Length: 90
Image 1 (spheres, one colour):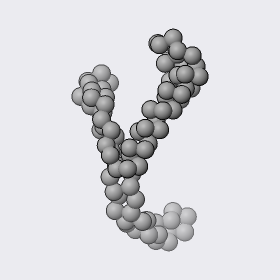
Image 2: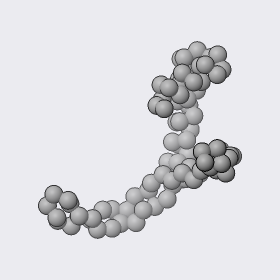
Image 3: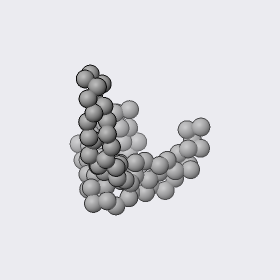
Image 4: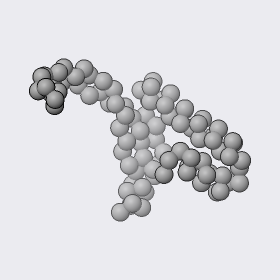
């Protein structure tokens, strides 16, 4: 499922216009992005939790040349599925 499929599902389930559904989805995604950028976790009870963590710096290897490359530390997004989602997907 991609973004357009999700917008179509929202339109079908709620009867909203496609423009309103797209705006609502953009608002939700923007809110999630802003919270993660600040370092705040986002929890949807039963669905799961989005949070950030720091991946430490490490040495990697260029597969074409075999040369070692330093990979800097960075923040990454993690997702932990909630119990209800885990039980549904089983």
